[in-house]
Image (cartoon, rainbow, N blue to C red; front, side, top):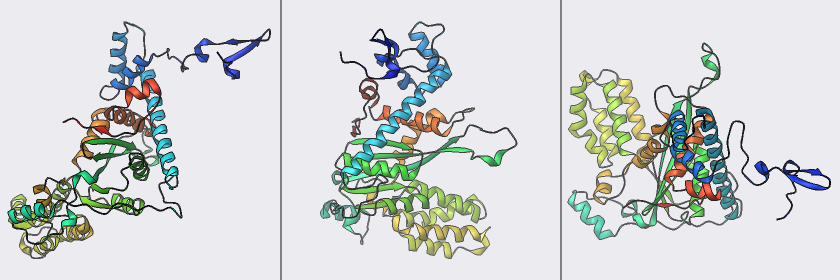
Length: 398
């Protein structure tokens, strides 16, 4: 065995090195921690995805038949440290991939870098035409209906959890009330991967690295998101070199319209009559002009607050470019919503972190969500035994 040339791992005594087996040959442990086998570490990370710290610690102690085993605080510290290490390796791998492909560490193309994405590949014209005739749609652009096998679908969603108080009660202006997580669900054919970060820009940088790593960056990228300006602007800025398009989540737009019209019109009966009288149908078929025209001719006697009519009109104008013909997309079996991103949020953040009485630090929230994402991506065992993250898309269950 070669000599370990680290001062912390040896002490000279009579010219011979004396090793501390607790640090020289095994993983180091923090205060109040005991040595963890790979199997124990795997269980610690696995339990953290859907069980509170206290319950998870109690379960581990029962499994190990220990009365005074691991405590809830120590358990939390272990998970946070592992989550931070996993996130760091994901970031390092993505940054290395970016560098290898002529991008800066923040996801920008370096000057002189040549990147030519594949052109859009759409569903066969005859198939689109058949679906359009069935729906009595006479005008459409075949290029709007991407071929799923040549497409990468990306759902982007933000989720907030309650922040731990860092100051005494009464001083509420010194810190935000929420901790933000950005979750991206990436799907190519029958495989997927979930990315989690503390910021939208950071998430898009990891997305570019992930797609380059898996050889998917040149395919058409379809971004599914809600109507938030910050998401649209970030995508426009970060993916300007790629072949991409943004599709506004149908259910978000429907909800937005219902909320705005509830505030604008006199009563739910009038609102529902307006929605079902052709307004939602216009939006379902991607007819923004028709929807705006209907807003403009509402009987003034039915309006409670005109400001919400104006606001909704401005919203529809702003998202016009991201509204497809949802009816035809659905008929063709194409996605119309970011529900996979919202489901991912439930899996890796909300189910674990949004419970009564829970509050989180920035680092703790992201770390636990990163561990949950690694579990979904089938990375936990690889990380536990090899300290490695593959970044390979996971085959989805049939």
